[in-house]
Image: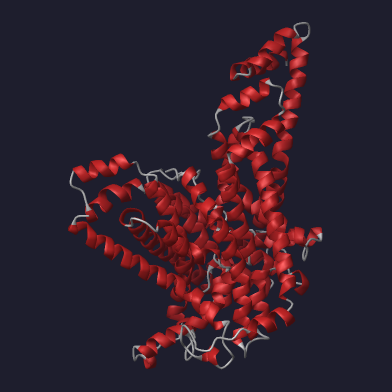
Length: 332
Length: 275
């Protein structure tokens, strides 16, 4: 016991705090007990700083994860086992949902990164002034509530009176106007486009931050070497934005997997489950059909899918993803 | 300016104006729809002639939307405040007090960043039901704060690690407690990061739909993101009024962002995005 306290003491002294070291020699008569009390007080202090966050985290994140896994291992009739997972494997709608969730991840990422990077390059490198104005205007969709956006776009897509129909009619194509949300093959794509519309401005902003952080010397050196136009973008700027790209990939993956309001309010996963994703299917099975245990199993699958995708992205990027940058729950 | 450089610049400007126009069109359409009588709302044009303001008058007088506003303001305000306080304290313990087990906590936080909300929804609902917290403000503030803490902690911890040790040491020698150090030295120095976190958490909470949908089942407790669903039925035949409600919901975060975006962007720029 004494030994442990002594090592603690040594470590503590090393760490700095000259005043405290001086204080220790001052209190020479009973140094160890005094120091032990100080250390204990410090531990309580640290504990108090961590307490609020830890409490909320355990209650609303850790406990739910564990109880979710537990619930998924019990069938609706109370039998213990992997029954819910076997049921999911044989459920065609579940597989449609998995496919759509993957489609969401791939399409939103590719489009948002392409649009975001392209526009950020134009703003940061080709605009003498007005950078802030374009960044802010493009970011505007991000601040609008998704459930509002869902209704606006449902109206835009509506046959006969929607804005898009107006464009088709103006082009003389009124007869070939597709009922985008009512057709199984186009419903998902139409909603994914709305997500891309909303999130591209965020990707633009993040790439603007990334490009602005590039050392000007690189760009000057590249200019001297004759790299300009496309080759400058391809060989200098894109690789130097790698960190931003990787963060956005992780963030975008989670965001796409948890998208719910757009799908729920625009198609409710329809027509005939064609636009169902894992997030909407969890809601439908758990809350509409009241099969909580089955929904819990799908929730575990969704969580595992998120982990696998991020691990895959981590591998493909050569382990360069820095989760410590602005990734993650920003997606919410 | 050499001639060769002028053209790319003009092309860039043109492309940006086009992209911005596409990006703004749905918002303009939403606002214009709110200014139409019921006949004009079924005309497929971006801007209809003869705008009217009576939709807003009717909606503000009769819809009861202010109850949704109140709920949203309390939930968003509570969530931002609680997230900032809890995440600042946790980040301080990890970054400055060098607590033992800080690495493990950080790892758990990074893991939580990878959780899609949908996978937590059912157990959170069951838990709140058992605690008797469904249809209460706390029932939304609690989970939303817990969900916001990981991201906030990552940002704040990074910002705190950038504060030089000397300042803290000097204060400690002067006999300052750790809380005084946090309040007087650390917090003022990481203000840009705190602003980024506050804005982000506000936007998240103001737009949160999934949790609110399952937790706020009583009409009097519903937050704004649930309002479109609530008013869709009653205003089915008169979309102008529905769009007035949509515009009112959207305008608040737009104004908030317009007021604070300068600090948001500069906060992001100051932090940089590390690769």
